[in-house]
Image 1 (cartoon, chains in turn blue, yellow):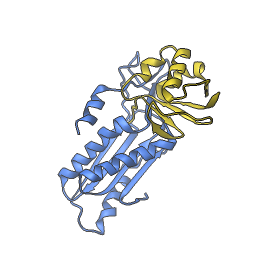
Image 2 (cartoon, one colour):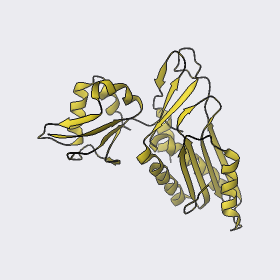
Image 3 (cartoon, one colour):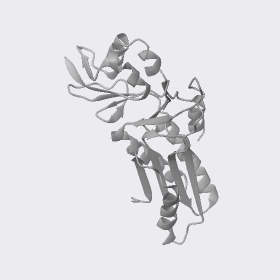
Length: 160
Length: 85
């Protein structure tokens, strides 16, 4: 995994490797000897979805805007760095067709202390929900629906 | 007459049959807002998406304000509120 100025950002159709993501952030900081905390957040595909008539999802399809997706992730990572003193930061997001239990997103934040790592990881996820060019569609054998924007996500992002 | 490619994302894919993949404006008004009005006339229901607070428009892969003046050949992307994560 490639880090540029402490950041590793990727949007991919490949399965996410959570263990490798954690290790890469830990090792990025190891040389400096100043890493005291790593927070790992993983978002998963749920099988149960209330927007579908039978409540069961078979495929979660993630569309994105390739020319803007990674750039918009980099922007929120830089914003996090301006608020907290952070070590390595990794944000990886799946696109394409996912199935229940697949990892959708992995956010890993290294810092000297846990408070910065927890806060920055939550900040990144809250901002990612409202600012990164990704759109979800839920599908099963009978229907497909685009996931509606949630006001609660906007409220969470706006609270920072 | 100005025209260019039109990109639709998320729930706006459902409007593709009415909007197609090209935009055009006869003028004289050539702002993004004028294009959105023209598209809304052709696709009933589109206004319910473009009037949401988090709706955005990108011109040539850069998010621009609704009073942005379009040029011939611009690629316009309509970006409904995002739902990633």
